[in-house]
Image (cartoon, rainbow, N blue to C red; front, side, top):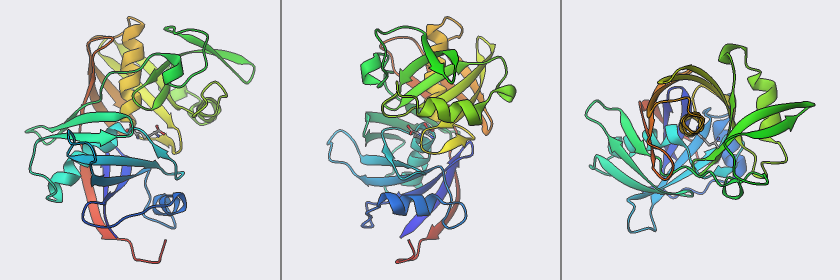
Length: 277
Ligand SMILES: N[C@@H](CCC[C@H](N)C(=O)O)C(=O)O
């Protein structure tokens, strides 16, 4: 099985062409591919397939390092665009793609960066899914004897956003997993720790569902800007500084799609030997 190793700001992926190869991945095989000692190593495995939707050119499937299939991945979407071009699967610059969360559109820019129309964020608690009595801008979330104020947003996948004074001091590796598995998020959740630098700039660290802390998370960056704008803290276009580098996120407001722009890099190509999984 041939694959490419790619990353978007250090959020890294094993990307597999399931159009020209027959690929069936069990959860155990995904875990083995993602293993940084026994496999290739990555935060997510991305599978490119032919689409069943006539309005999309490909189907984009996403598996977390823990083996679970999930709905959306922003950094992966930019790598997906670059992969289908590099592999000669398309010659288009604007590529509509089917995901478990619906259709998104990827646009390769003349600079080589990729802009993704990530769709309209979902704020209704039941659709995130998040257990809350009613939709609100902030929700109290009790965790281990303390109550945190969070924002809850779905970008197709669920996100909790926690404002912090300093990302450097944020307890990402303790509070992150506690919120990821909080009973009020029945499908678990990605947790962003957001520090506001100014109206057009935030810093963000993310504990990802199914992968742990990553160097960047595109969908959480979108969710953080949505939450920050709903809290009247941010402008329409925001620089989001993650440990792996910067994304540009734009959102006009409720009912409008979120746009994410950033890099996508191919590191190497390889072949996974049959029978070794
Ligand atoms: N790294 C991604 C998100 C991957 C999926 C996420 N861990 C989930 O479980 O929803 C991104 O860049 O958005």
